[in-house]
Image 1 (tube, rainbow, N blue to C red):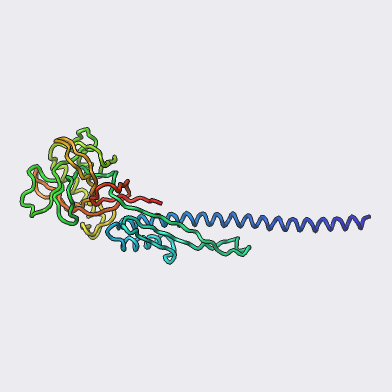
Image 2: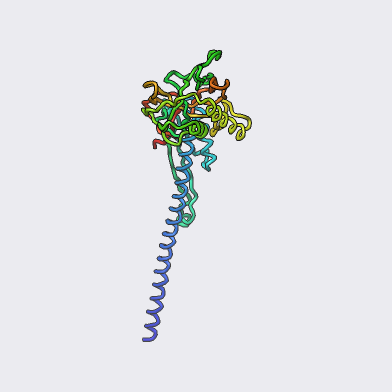
Length: 314
């Protein structure tokens, strides 16, 4: 009897060892799955964010420079840790969107125990540009609706006496804008030139015209931006070579006049400040309209005045 019991116990012990071995193998499998799924999840997020950033960066060159858009998108993808050989960037035939795709190989950890050495994660992002529809940070200048000539010198805001001997330069308008509609004074006007309007302005908005020329606050605000550029950037920015965050680049509404006190916004433009000319009431804000792309709501049906909004569309 004792021998029988002993044999049975040994048999049971062997069965337990087998069960434990199987259970441990299953447990390792679950650990491998959880570990590698977590690894793939982290990598997937990284790739997705990288292609988003690359597409947004490349889109800033559209629609005028599609080759630059592709080069910049690939450069940003590499800077964000993606394998440049696994990244594609394609501009649409209308030059208004760019798609960036990446297929990244991921080395697995515990799944190697089961013969799976790597996996692949993929992500794609498409960024599209269109005329800006709504933006924040606009300065209280404007330009009357007209065809803009980029890279040619403009008098954006004229003094009360208009412009004389301007050498055939293009003209914007003398009128300043009152975004809040509260008739704020010179201090508010000066600060809005310096820092931009904190609220949003959209196509179709009706805005009050600010009365008075306010030449002093105009000069103060413009010179503040120019001096800030000179402090931050060396060499000094120019209209055709400037840093992305240059304070000399301002955003202004393109307007049509309703009456002597109000205008309606029909679009938006970007302007590079050259400086302020003249003295007293005859001071004029001069510079160049430029093409610029920013993160802003956009409208493909709006008239294009050179300031584009970029958004991810997929």
